[in-house]
Length: 123
Image (cartoon, rainbow, N blue to C red; front, top):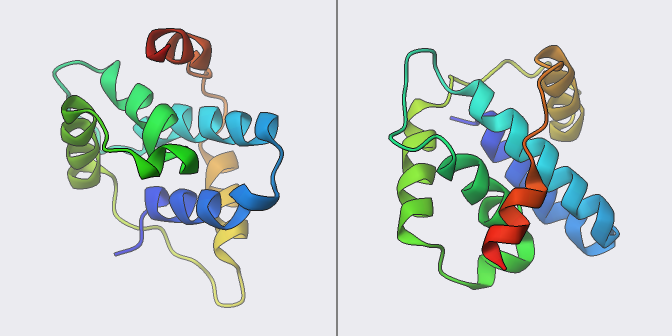
């Protein structure tokens, strides 16, 4: 089953080598803000601040993939993988990146997660 997270993770993996650092941070921030909104309604995480931090500082940061994530991040990631909504249909001929953009704009209008807080805490 391909989820939003899978597509976003793949997008980061494919684009990171040719994407400037500021753009990589912006993408990580946007994906970290949007991904929790795609979790099924009613699902709750004991500390809702952990998931966006884990997504921003580890899941959507290719440079961080070389390190083992914090245990609480792995737990939040596992929780998200369990509770994320079922896959959305991708029409034939539409690339994963196009589907990602279309899905992102379909649920747009969300407030951005404050990545600066995560960066300062990771410090």
